[in-house]
Length: 118
Image 1 (cartoon, one colour):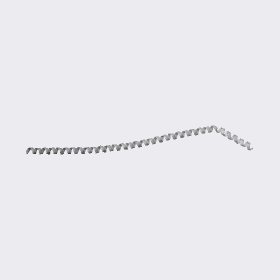
Image 2 (image 1 turned 60 degrees about the horizontal axis):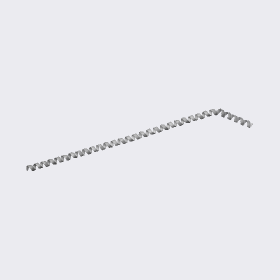
Image 3 (image 1 turned 135 degrees about the vertical axis):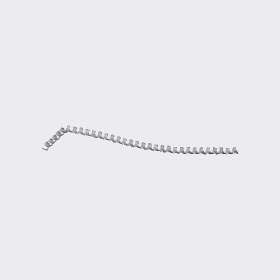
Image 4 (image 1 turned 90 degrees about the vertical axis):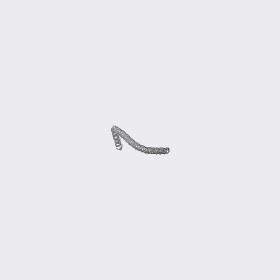
């Protein structure tokens, strides 16, 4: 009987050990699942931050490209205006040089007209 009682206690101890091991494993699984959730949440947050940064970088790049294009357009405009002014001035100077000849030609033709009419 003593032997049976000892066997019974051993079985109870084994069952207790099994139950404790199961509880430990359940706790480990629960902790692992919580850690998994934390890691996933952290990764999602990091991904969202990376996406936001990429959008911000793209927007900044777009703004810079637009600013560069405007600056280039303004430079071209200034060159065209400057070249146009230079050509206009050159034509005006050439016209001034030819003015005495043109006046002389007009006066000459006017005199011819007067002589022809008389």
